[in-house]
Image (cartoon, rainbow, N blue to C red; front, side, top):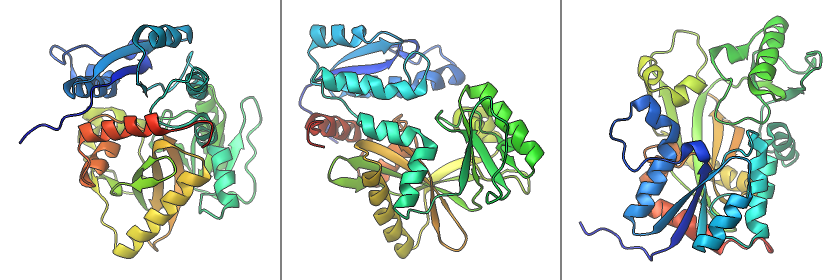
Length: 344
């Protein structure tokens, strides 16, 4: 089969300075590779497509971006930044800087990042628009934990702002005020952020990938399965499920296309496009749902700029929809280059 040809672009790949990938996987363990797999997959794929690729490592200096723009004049910056100076919410400021410099970039705009990263704010906005979301309460740091009477157990406790399932484990689902206080304190200590406790929705974990600016495409709904969970253990995507290959094998983790009836699939597509637009998202995103046994979808989280590693949820669902990995990356760059921050 002939390989697809792409117009050659100059691409600056923005990533954390500690995650600039090597040229080869040779000599690295599976645990080492997982740290920078996304960066490696993107850089190597873009090079294989014939683009000029310039990895740019960031930590706490925006001037590095300015130098990269001056030196390489990239057509687009492929944005893989998830935090700045150690603070997750600051990734939106990196994107704002790119817009101020007139630099085209992949992924979500600053407003969409700001709204979606705040899990409480996004739920309030969605609830206003009558999108089903779990009931919740926020527990700020250095405050006494007092559960509102309307918030019934069981509850899932996590960071209100930190992504990547950091701090989420089987112990995150609590069933008493004592355990709630313990878990809130753990989240405060572990993530240095406010905690959010939301109604635990029993059901299936469904993911929907989307790409677009004003016109939005949805990819095949995806589902994760945990075959070897102990009886009664909650079916949740913990940190170890997402990032520990050994634990994944222990719990029988697998993922694949979600088996939905045509009616459920239509409802989910319509709902997902509404959520994407309500939260002012652009570029690409992944929406995480719980599907209850009686067929109701609850939006758990909106994830702008989700993981785009090869063979991950987002890229696999795109492939199921007919978009292989390299064309997917090309589409994300095309969306970035066509996005107009002054009119969106």
